[in-house]
Image (cartoon, rainbow, N blue to C red):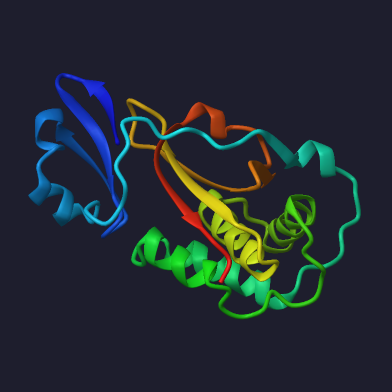
Length: 194
């Protein structure tokens, strides 16, 4: 999908390199360009729907609540994902984590609420709030619980600012501030438990 920004151009996400491109709208339909961007293997849609029906946990809903300390593996994964975002494409990393690589450690993941609480605890532990590692750790935790999830990448048009979120059963486990709705969904990747 392309998000038009005016002047006959649109923003397109290329999963091969994990980059956002500003291209003429008439070129976006070219098969060669789609293949070069890594879009050839994905189902194309003129409209990517936001799958979020509700948000399980926010900064406000968990404010003042004591949460169990996060597993060290989950904290390390969050830090690594934050660091790696510039050189490991989203689709590749999502497939690795969505396949259930590694164990998140202690804590029982039973659904979006428990994933949301774990994510909040992780972000408190690392003193960092970033959508990229948050969404990918959500996918990792969902894979551990054998829950299907969907990663959605949106763009704040006409800017190049992007936001990534992960839903489990149409529920966004944790979003510190509900801002995903400001972004036009551009790319979606469904991950099924293995």
